[in-house]
Image (cartoon, rainbow, N blue to C red; front, side, top):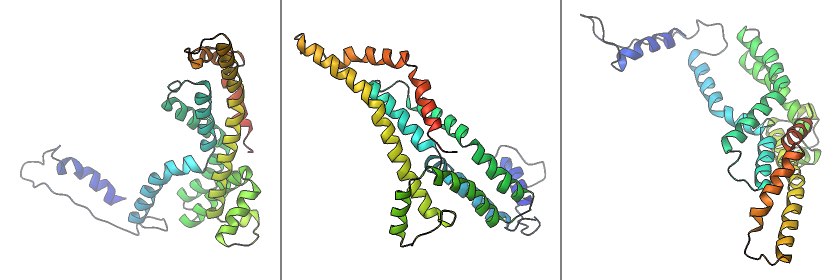
Amino acid sequence: MKAVCRFLLAMPVLFGLAAPALGQSAGLEVSVNIGEEGGDLGTAIQLVLIMTLLTLGPSVVILMTSFTRIVIVLGFIRTAIGVHQAPSNQIIVGMALILTFFIMGPTFSQINAEAVQPYFNQEMTSMDALNQGAEPLRKFMLAQTRTSDLEFFLQLSGSGPTRAEALPMRVVVPAFIMSELRTAFQMGFLIFLPFIIIDFLVATTLMSMGMMMMPPVVISLPFKLLLFVLVDGWSLVIKSLVESFVI
């Protein structure tokens, strides 16, 4: 990592933030000494891998964890109540991230103990660490995935019957995403039912009273908010979301 340190020290001079000493000419000295470190990969390759992980990190968090189901269900709640700006998108995404890290905590701890720390301690190669770290995540996804979805993607990939521990990630990940979408929409349907009943009762009452010009949404919104508060809706939804995952 000497090359990285020298590059960072030369950055102020390069951008004119620090003037060189009198009698010295400004310059940038970069020397790459691959092979001085104990890792199985060179410094340049390690930097490329780190940048790749940082780029793909959001996709991994969104599609390979509990985030997908949580954020969809929370969005359904806002739509079912009828308030399109409260809570805002930032609050929903933030709440989904916090719940995701809470649910995925044991999985992340296992990945850190079995793959990340041994790799930093130079006890295993990068490929072994990658394979070892993917195993806890694979177990989590398989626990939430329906068998029918796995069989569907196995058929599409042209693979025959395969044991669960031998399933490739290219089959597990799309099957997991499909199962999560299906589960989230099922939970959203159940959330919509009581609020639809309130809208129906309010609309029927207004029509029977001859108030055709009064929008039913204006009257039903306070009743839906009151119902959601009385039943402690947020606690029920969050508890149901956390308990819906098999850990």
